[in-house]
Length: 530
Ligand SMILES: NC(=O)C1=CN([C@@H]2O[C@H](COP(=O)(O)OP(=O)(O)OC[C@H]3O[C@@H](n4cnc5c(N)ncnc54)[C@H](O)[C@@H]3O)[C@@H](O)[C@H]2O)[C@@H](O)CC1
Ligand SMILES: [K+]
Image 1 (cartoon, helix red, strand yellow):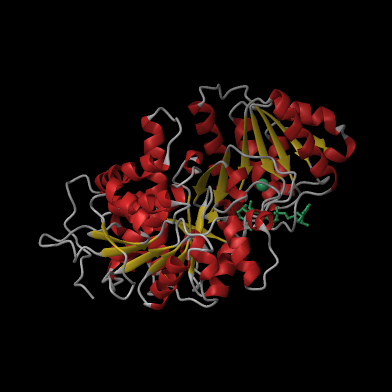
Image 2 (cartoon, rainbow, N blue to C red):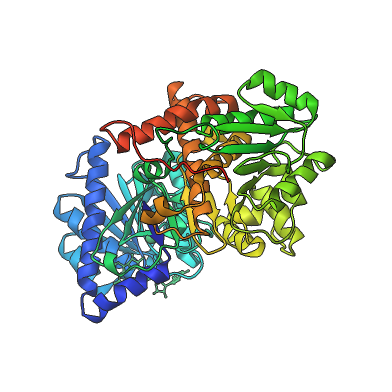
């Protein structure tokens, strides 16, 4: 599991070591890790180390200190290093070390930014060490002008790669909100722990790959601000059938989805659910949609009855419903009222009561979330949500009391208790019609299989109310991995929603096998029918 923390949490973890006079030691560790990561990256790209040109953009704070010390290490390895002091001063000890190592220094105040931007764009490595966790707001003044010019110069004649020191300057370490201009990094080398802003869009757009360098503060961290499930966590959370399982003990999902306008959504939701290990899917909806579901998925048991007449362990409601689908929306509300775990997707979102509970998982995209929050008195539009996804997901969970999954390149899942997961397992090809219906089906299937216990989530330190977020994150991870695998199978080509559903069992098997190479797993999360 990747645990990410806010800048404030990281600085609090550093505090005891700073009080013990170890500030310079921490900085040297960070800088050493940054320099090593740069050497590894150059080697991976088949580039020479000796003579490679490095430009470090150094602010006056400790972030600039990390960058200058790292550049001093690189200079000692024979690289040609230049520092641009973006605010007229540098961390004194780090700057002295850099100059002793033979580095060249420019002061941005006295230089022509056009020339510096052109030199930076020609470098093999650009280190962005202007602002770190101590920054408030984005780049300003001449530093902003320089970065803008570098972004433009790299666009025209880009060369080399950009490494962000701790985080890309201009990205908020806590929220991931970004103030332009920001120099997009190929690699972010971050110290002590990932910062939560690196795992949420738009911060993640600018971060590239994230590499964490331990600096000896790791025992001091509190509960993470954001978490990301990795393969071993995913394998540990996936349910497996008990030896004497039967279809009912494995979980039954009820699906209220699809309409005359969007019948395919019902099919795709059912296909996603069937692919994600559920014992049975019961479909409730209009006869013409049920016919299509039967033809496409003969495994599904279709009914035109009510929610109360159908015995299930969880519900999925809303995919492919419109505001005029009154019967289906009434069923969706009944499902919510049933008290069973429920995924509420798409068309169900505008029809929900204002206050919900954590076992209701909402799955909006940014536009749907804007509508939902506006109904609850918020003023954010879609663009505002996309500019601050982490805050929006947290806010929505707090206001509704539900678990909120905000779909995106980094899919965020916020529990009303404050737990947040960020999954980025997929590929942009997942942004295709029907993909969300499959995701809703997958999460519904996982809720139906989860059972009342949380024991198997204990190793993730998940509490009772937080388990729904963990399961939704598990669904997002599985959906992302399936999409990526399906695209990879076509040499990185496009995918359709149906193909994503078909790839779920393979993604499930692969992640289980990689984390448990000895053979099939024996554990079971089966539970008696409630
Ligand atoms: N505290 C420590 O001991 C350690 C800190 N580390 C590094 O230190 C960084 C945090 O250092 P600092 O707290 O010095 O903060 P920063 O280096 O992020 O920058 C703060 C400095 O920039 C100025 N500033 C703030 N916002 C600005 C803006 N929008 N535009 C221009 N200038 C602005 C401030 O006045 C201050 O001088 C971390 O990101 C990390 O890179 C690491 O070296 C590890 C150890
Ligand atoms: K930085």
